[in-house]
Image (cartoon, rainbow, N blue to C red; front, side):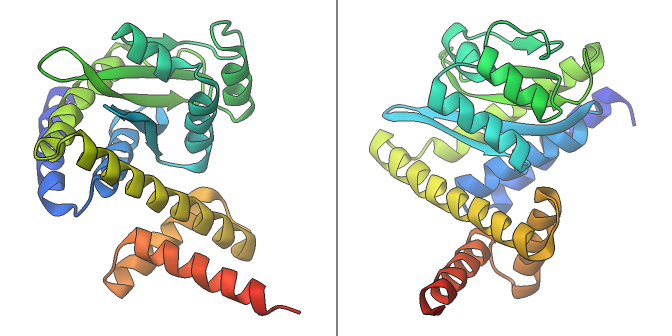
Length: 239
């Protein structure tokens, strides 16, 4: 399938995702996973969302990208904050020699992320509502086609996310995002529990949780919350 056709299919898939997902959290997870799977050179992806009265929120495909997003939120330095402040695409071809964000670059290179592209998600009035980031495992990982596809996905994702938000004022939106953050925190805790029990990677642990959710006919956040609650209860009764 050509890149143009792939882009068209992604637009259709994102539109279907808006209809099928029951929360903003699920939609952002779906966008990040779709991006990581669609851009050939991407080994991971994340979506960092901003809104009035909200300081920043991110969903990542795996624990590696989640840690890099968390580092940016804590320090306020990295490609995401730069892309939001400048309202332009930020790219790093080799994070081993990157000087704009030393702490972030060291952490990324140490985790095996050597290249990235962060694309602002623009709404009609010109304000970015967030950024979409793709991560590569090799220097200069993204060629012209990869960049173009990532940028197109960011455009489709903006429409999907803005459409989900449009019926909510700032107060309601902030409440929904904070609830999503709580949900994601529970997912990350559950991933850690599965990793410890099964001696597996974050990606495998997340796959286990998703398979459990499908089997039970429930959602990923619900499965994660149940696992965390049961683990906490066991810790409390342990002598």
